[in-house]
Length: 411
Image 1 (tube, rainbow, N blue to C red):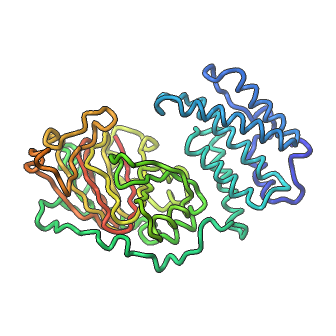
Image 2: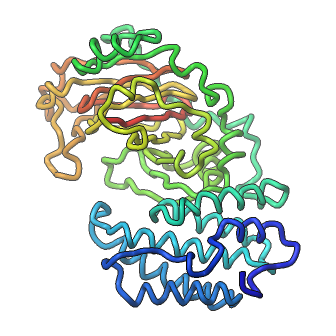
Image 3: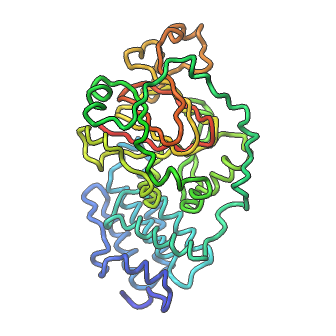
């Protein structure tokens, strides 16, 4: 490592440097032809500045690269964004985070660098053997070692305010047709009677042994993930006109939407939190039944759903099989067969074609008369239970309590 890039006796800096390739020639990306020559040269210049110990100039170069890459990431649909530009963004985040942590550094530099890395993980693509995840592990260990900044206002999580959602009603599911339940069915039985015919079922006894069932609480999630930046949905449901998304730390989310009164509903929904925070992923397991699918294990999408009581996912369908696992709290769920799609009045716009126009628990039957005749199954999903939602099966979900769920989407 070139002179000037290392602070003597600085444990954090030494740990970060140990993650990098041994030579500056190896600290580079193979970006292909879709990234213009000017950006490639800018990144090369930033690496030269970093290895030359010129932190201020490297920081400027990495921020210039991030600004330009950000424009590329936000032009057109996300699915059309070239992976190479996501790699550019991740590389810019890596260099910026390293510059921020180079000694001598500001007192808040490590927390700021952690936020930068999270942006790289959220918006970027994997580079240098997932180096951002390894950098984050070093930064978090440094914060936990006694130098962690106060990520949120002081709060007593054991006495959370519940008045905000005292009005949340619990449906009498005894009056409704129940989702069948099975305890640890064999793979063959599940495949023959539920997977192949596309029938929902609640699996009991499958997730009871997962560490998350005993370990996870608001306190634990804040301890493990409090300083991590995540996307949060703001609004009652994603079909509302005033619905939006914002970025905040997990601690800020907990403080604003879980422990305190808020005018809006906040929901950490459909987020691949476990790719971002491997410590939490170690507390869950992929259900064995996923092996019955055609895809590989790494193709399974694992999402987190964390929010206060009252969060709602409108009636919608997904293009993959789904195991919805309840870890904290309860959820009321209704399920409608894809054969009854016409009676569910899907939105006509392409963006919401997989979502019903009907407010399930307060339907406008004058506007949507067929909905009253649509048969459905329902359940209250409790901690430790897994609901199998077959591909294209319509489902409506409302949290009855403070809730944390984990979904596994598989082919």
